[in-house]
Length: 289
Image (cartoon, rainbow, N blue to C red; front, side):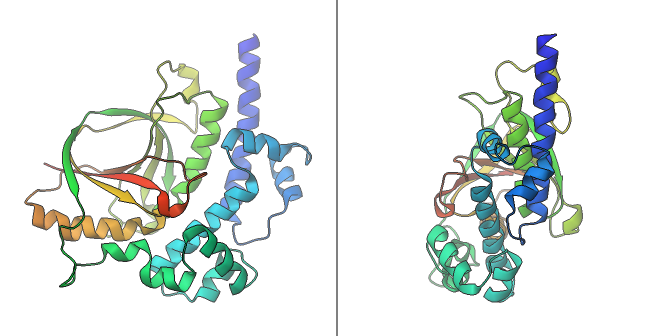
């Protein structure tokens, strides 16, 4: 009986914090109102943010800052919007405030990041840039069982699924010393509408997994084993589109390899909650025949 009550209690908190996660991602361009978030969570304004931080590993303020800047970096790398427009869309009151905050986290002011950020290194090769200057290793990967949360929409929006996964895994005690983090991207963004793209935010399961832990929104899945080209990338997640463009457009044709009919996936080697965007490490796995 005690176990049942404990499970009910965890699920109760999990549902409340999941509502906060969904609200944050839907209102990143608005001022942060802790009382409003407490209302969304149906928790005491005095305590709910401590519960959020304990479960998610970062404060709500830090989460909003991280997500806003990640969205801004994506716009800088992939759109023609002005810096003023990006500042407004990502919830900053003026360009000066946005520039100051972005520079402190990404190491470059927005205008310089757009022209010289890490996404630029994956541009098509020039006479001074070899198509082979970025090492890609070919290796065999075993089938990997995972626990996942589904996401539908722009791939950059998978951050919400990861936040939901983090909250659920924390409340259900699914982390251990060997936990690995993956993103699986099931559709080709060139041929599938952005609003219909499917992806999975995943972790490896603990050694002992209780069946009741896999209640919605969590489910089990597998990452297919086989031969992969593995690109080790260091830099912001917002630059991934340029990385993939180089991998598919430059490395693959020159390699003599052929892509297999399976989705690419990524393994995240450090934590975006306590790592500067420029120091994030990701292994990108391209399946090969």
